[in-house]
Length: 320
Image (cartoon, rainbow, N blue to C red; front, side, top):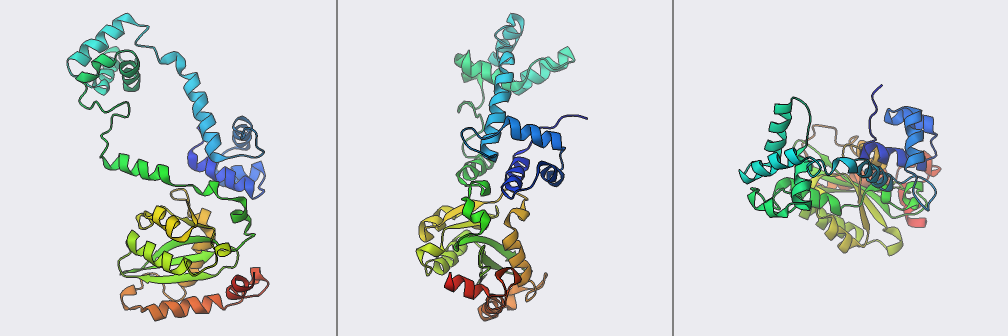
């Protein structure tokens, strides 16, 4: 069986499952890997100076080992005079590193060198040759203003769900919210739910923009006392791109689930399902009034819940 590296998503899932107390076998079955793979991952990438397993730290450790293991290939061009001469000659003819690597590998009918190795050679050994590159903006090579680079910069600013305080996972306090957008045929509803009490908040949106989400969120959360607003967790929709302003407006720390991991925000997904009882899928929100949305919110917040020992979300939120 071929070996596959753990992905960031699998590491995040493993970290969450271990925090919830699942065994290695249960975690392996959930993320679709063997128990031996999970055991090896936990052993090799355990967080230094801390008990347990952290997805971000584990990824950094794995990357560091791969870099170290590949050190012997980094000076391939430097240690091969003929290859070095061939590469430098083609660079002076304005060939890109990708074109050079592709042509050499084609002529040799086998993998000889990668374009990344050529870039490393240029930036580490022969920076004088950079002037022959079409784009000379540093080792990242991609132009600063491209959409992909912009997306990467924005993603780097996000705090991920596995960095949330332990109290959020255990639901030991009020004020840890999860937020989402429920889409209709026309229009949308902004939903929030408090993880401990189950209290929901619904607001109809007219545009569904990040600015409108920020405005509605600030208006709702600013009314709460400080001890009832700690964190909020979103998915990765563009409607939450103003998260830095939401943090400033509300004083809450904003976290994001990993892409395509809706189960990481199960509390919010359940609340959205309750909302669908009043506004089924394919409902046009164009004819839904704010009063209709407030009515659904009021009914859900005054409905007893089994997990709350048959108290209502309003009772728990107001008395805790």
